[in-house]
Length: 369
Image (cartoon, rainbow, N blue to C red; front, side, top):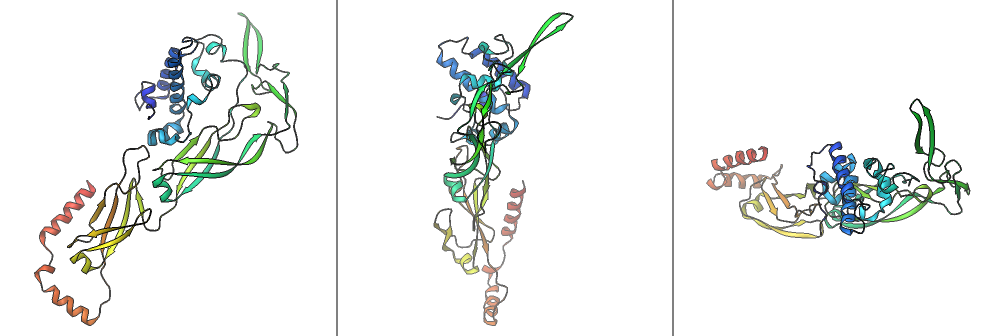
């Protein structure tokens, strides 16, 4: 079953501003918050759906990908998928949106305290053949990513006593003012490294070669970026891993050219084949196919093979295979061939017709209109 449109989830139009997106999410987050709907699984699901929609639409890059490719931009486990994160993860991601609606700087007291850190994103380029793009494909790639190193030991941060927050009291003319902020020593994790083996960085991470399996949906195109949640670098102290950003590159095909979801092929035929017609073999993405060139075919004519192109990445059907006919004109001929052509040229059948010229202008008008 297809996912609900993110704009529809937040009750927004597609040209909504950043502030409108934030306001709409905050409204739904308050309405379906679990502390207000204890035991209500439907409310919890709607809360997560709203968080997923906000995570994408509030990020300019992800919003652009979603507007262009829909849910396919985050398919195969990619994207945010609010259902895969705990409530605390959602609060850590979007606590600033909640404000003080539930007191204490966050929902249910979860907005403060130890901060869950997120690992950095990884970016890779993936080159795909036209066959991979048409059929969809699973790829295994090797990446060097940061992972939690073995042998690392942690201790409670002495500056914040493990809370991840430091509190300061300032005397003002209005009295004592208390403020809380993220602990600068542990960066909000509440932990400090007490033992670090060689080769391990200050966050307790080390680089390790990892094989990641990627599922590429059919219909992706050059420049598209897929986001795989949680497949990036791990976070210090067991936080939330970053994402793996996969940039798609297309390998040029030997014979076929892509135009959106259509495939283009230029077929050269002889003058005799154009006059009498002929069945010819043409290359396809996989294998070959036979097509019939009708008798009297003009140079420049397009033959269209329905639904033999590339699937739409959002599932809206499939493009066509368009075969462009080009009649070959020899540049050198023998004396006998010249005499034969001159003789044929005297026939009315070989003289251009006025309606053919008119149809040419009609085609040109349609092309540029």
